[in-house]
Amino acid sequence: MSVKQVIRFVFFLVFLLLILPIHLFSQEKIGVTSDNYLPVKQVGVNPALIVDQKFFLSVNITGAHIFAGSNVINYPNSILFPPTDVGDPVYDEPNKFAKGFISGEVSGPSATLSYKKNSFGIHSGSRFYGNMNRVPAVLVELINAGGTEDVEDGIYTMKNGRFKSMSWGEVGISYGRILRSREYEMISAGITVNRLYGIQQSSLNVKSGVVNVNQGSGTISEIDGRYAYTDPKFKSGKGWGMDLGITYKGMFDNVNKYLPHSRNGGCKVSDYRYRIGVSLLDLGYIRYNEGARYADLKQTDAIRVDDLFEGNPEVLGQEGNRYTAFLPTALSVQGDFYLADYIYLNARINQRLSFRNSFGVERSNLIAVAPRFESRWLSASIPLTLSNYTVPQAGFYLRLGFLAIGSDHILPFFRRGDIRTVDFYFNLNLFIRNSPECRVVDNRSIPWLCPSWGKVR
Picture 1 (cartoon, rainbow, N blue to C red):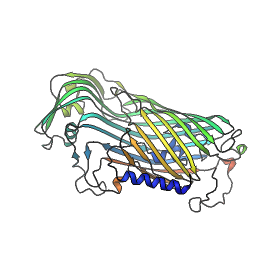
Picture 2 (cartoon, helix red, strand yellow; picture 1 turned 90 degrees about the vertical axis):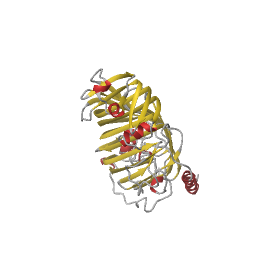
Picture 3 (cartoon, rainbow, N blue to C red; picture 1 turned 180 degrees about the vertical axis):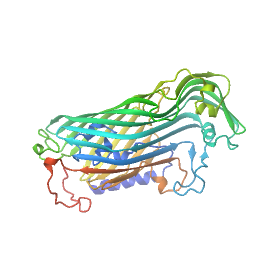
Picture 4 (cartoon, helix red, strand yellow; picture 1 turned 60 degrees about the vertical axis):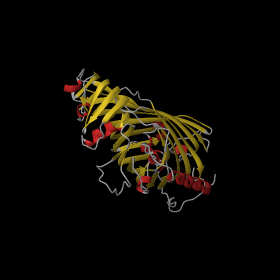
């Protein structure tokens, strides 16, 4: 496939997405985590990706990501300059089942290093996840509106509904290694281990219940479920998390004696024709024991909505003061394919593995395809995603030197319409290209100013 054909293909996909209604959401930072010149961010997708990384040392100075989306709440007309107050959202039909996800991340100082067959990483940061599933939209409006007359009166049923949120800080280490390098194939594996410090957690799992809305206030009766709640506090709990991954690469060059970033290996990093990876992400837990409580909910008496979502133990009861909440575990499969000089196509599937009735948070399912241009000083991609395997959407990612910005849902920044999803991220990164033994004066032109369209491997 020629470069011209790739460009035409990308523009066709973007045009297709511009004319489709956008309703659901993605939250995985597809652009930045598929950029091979930012291995310090790729480690969160598959820890084996730092093996054989393009830079000897990659350093993340700081970064942030914010995402929020729902299928029942929207802000009219524009996200950049809305004609209404952002505090006045519009709600869809009240008996519609609501879905929603919110996530945030602040990444602190982090680094990955590759030398010969081994790679190492350290990272720090904080994360927040929240999700709701199968909840009557009127209940979401009650929570957000705080009991106003705007809420429509009525009786609404709730079955297998759940609200979950959790936030934590983490510090971790990663290790990866080339397991096999023979002829034109290479297999690598990696692991990340995180120490987790709980900040907040709430889980409400309702097998069945009846929501009664009357004159702007709401109650829930005939409820069968369970709840857990922890008051916000740093180190309200502690736990462990783990990521595991493996990759297989079909290489351009013979890699029998391949030792990345080593003089013995020719001080080069070999490129691949294709790469396939499989990883298990966020396998772990946090044990909350400070300001924590949980109980089964089996009550016929009416419970105020505020008491329910504030975890009021005087109303809901309390069976214990410590419990375990699980991370948003997922199985991820990745593919990355060389199309032409500097042009790649990344594909990814994420399948959540969380149990819906457990304490903790859930990830959204995802299918993503992201064509990209990639060089040392410039990378750009257009992630195309199907969140929860349903409605498509388009994003955009750009890295200029050390600064990377992007969104998995870029259309609200350019097109007027009802806004259901917000997504934006940035990262500031530094790098050292060569190991000490391989440092030489590089007199070549800066590739993004004067690109050479010959072989880049």
